[in-house]
Structure formats: structure tokens, C-alpha cells
Image (cartoon, rainbow, N blue to C red; front, side):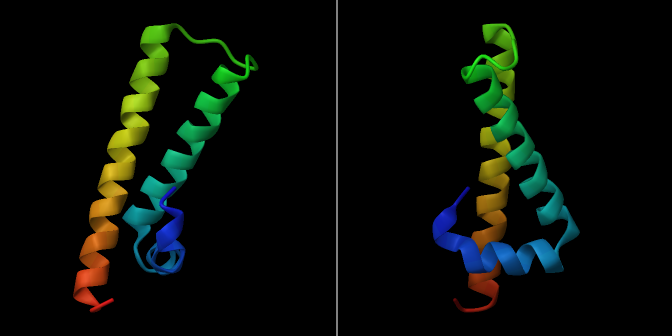
Length: 75
């Protein structure tokens, strides 16, 4: 997720517990979606859509936190 911000993400994961939680949850959802797509897990299309929307919401929230951090630290 957001690989171009790897350094900022590393700092935020250490300094901000909420960001770390969002990042972890996003990665969990990413893995679950990949498992469904690969046939290792089964979900209805509706349930899969819910997971994808939640993953996107978390990514948007994390991105907003990254932008705020960069602005605050003049990066």
C-alpha cells in the first residue's frame, strides 16, 4: 500500500498507534481478498465488495494521515 511513501509509513507506524492499526487492518483485508480471488477462501460477491470498500476506505484514511504528516514535517 502506497509504496512510494515507504519512509513516511515506517515512521508513522512507530509514532502513531492509530495509523499502525489502520495499516495492519488494510494488509489483513488485502490478504483476505487475495485469498478469495485465488479460491483459497469463499465469499459471496456482496461480501467481497464490502471487504474491498473497507480496504479502500482504510487506504484513503492512511493516505490522508501521510499527507498531513508530510505537510507537518515539510517533506
